[in-house]
Amino acid sequence: MIIINGNEINTSSILQNYPQNSIQEHIIQMLSESEDTYRYNTLDQLNFESNLRSSTVDAAISLHRSRFSFKVFRESRCNPKYWERTNEGGFILKDGVEASKGINDIYINSSMYGTECATAIVIVFYKAVLDVFKDDAFNSIFPKIHLMNWHYMDPKLGVNVYRNQSEYLPGDCRYVKNPDVDPLTPEWQGENAIDLGNGRYYGHGIGIRSMDEIIRILNRFRKEDATESAYLMDSATRPDYNRLERLYNNYIR
Image (cartoon, rainbow, N blue to C red; front, side, top):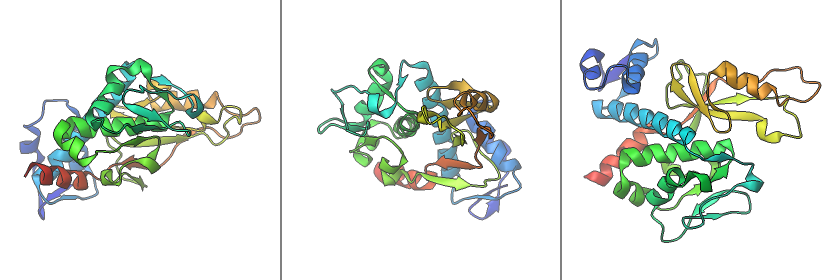
């Protein structure tokens, strides 16, 4: 059920604004058919979330189609024109570089970049926000970027982990844990994967797969006496869509 400004809405009129079989249509139908209640102050809030989730799916697919490679942190690489590589293997935007150019370069000159799956998902989230906000707003709101894992993300994105959700939606980042990982390949202790809808997920280093396929691949990297399969955790990592909508509206006013 979707409640906007205290009133349950008929989604048929909203769905007319989106192409048939689009990610936005799928998201709104899922929210509307849920037994849980999803509350928004305005219709713009709902549309903003569905558009940013769709942008996240597009950013994940584009990264998958690029030449961006999988590398462990000690072997990570980036374009030194835009990014400075840290001793930990992360990337810090260089002084004087516009954030939009730094993020877009990862997609344009993807063969110059390589890192682990956590950083790839952070890149996807930033790219999705950039494509919705456009250059000027993005550069103003996110002037400094440190790419590595969730701990280094700009707090204005409001990225948090939400557990035991009734619905998991396209654009969510899911985590597949591999508890019996081989200690010789710790990079396969789990996989961050963007929900693309229709049972497909993007995980850096694994590609676009079904969840069963992701689990089978992770199970190849278990220790010799493994007893427990990799499994999908009941949680999702996502940005704070309402906060981002307010930031965007404050900038364009």
